[in-house]
Image: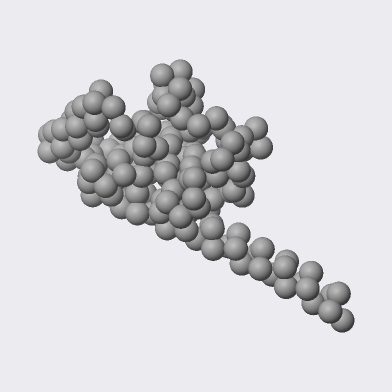
Length: 177
């Protein structure tokens, strides 16, 4: 009887731990999404991998981006209508960094229509409690990639979908990439 109970308890413990990890990741991603929706770039930057925002050049780019967003928000009536965060993939550990993928669907409205995009974020953590999120496309940029941890070959990153642009009447528009 003891031989059955111990493995069963270990299995249940592992399942609860994985479920808690998934909840932590999603909660952290939702906090980041709320900061983005509120155009709170200081909080949003706190969820960006530290090496990407630690130098003066990166801090200046974040400030310029925030200033531009505020300008366009006012000029074109831009607002973040919604940000949906998916469920994280299984967490893998690679070279001391826990990693996962998580989908983010963002819808932005403006006077002339709306834009909806679905992106993949890479979740990164060194302790499993504090998670950072990086747009998967940044790993394609040599300058950004040099500041990011190496991705696990076990991490599956889906192909990015084309954004959906709609006019003010809700009619889809064709986007050339």
